[in-house]
Image 1 (cartoon, rainbow, N blue to C red):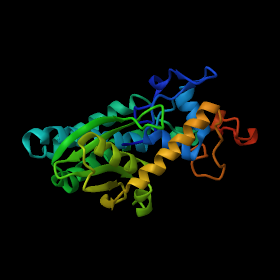
Image 2 (cartoon, rainbow, N blue to C red; image 1 turned 180 degrees about the vertical axis):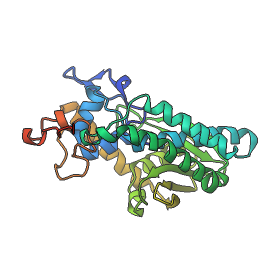
Image 3 (cartoon, helix red, strand yellow; image 1 turned 135 degrees about the horizontal axis):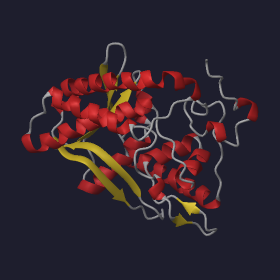
Image 4 (cartoon, helix red, strand yellow; image 1 turned 90 degrees about the horizontal axis):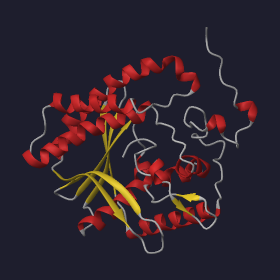
Length: 292
């Protein structure tokens, strides 16, 4: 899955209430878990209050590439063959253009270059979609495509949910990502998403995947692919459930600590809530002057 907001847990997730009458989230996905690990206050703003900030340009590029991959996967289930490169790239470009119409977050100091970045995003999307078609697509024979899976856990009062991009006939779950630089392997091994999706696949099919991997399309000067194979054990999911249980207890109690101010995400370039956050000192909320 791509970006901060993945379509699960948006404004439509509001509606449940705790014993104080406050609104709560309706389900748990990896996006919420990731956001909570960085800044619970951000979860309150986004998933409790429904203040939706669109993702940045990188996430929109990822959405476009995923759309190209989705079109190819759906066709390949039927034909057993990959679509021509131009079909994949056209679908990716169209997916990108549609996604940016839904909004893109730019930090104030990026406003002047926003139009240029949006235009460059088209080229990047098409390039990475082409790389997917050459390096990754031929290895995949889909069994499930864009499959949304919901799974209840006894000790939680709301379910886990996730949408698996693709799962293959030979029990491989390759998760497609786009990135500005190569991933450190530790990032894949600690991913909440891979832990959750491993369990969701088992819930849906009755068997755990034989292989889990992150397939990264790296948008360096010379674009490249990176494949990181990872694995999960039952204890990984047990710990994830404990994290979710603690998160829900804090949500129910109305406790939403702010991020560590030294964390990379607690900055105007990465957080759309920065300028209105009550935990940021006023002297740090001075918008940069626009050039004449």
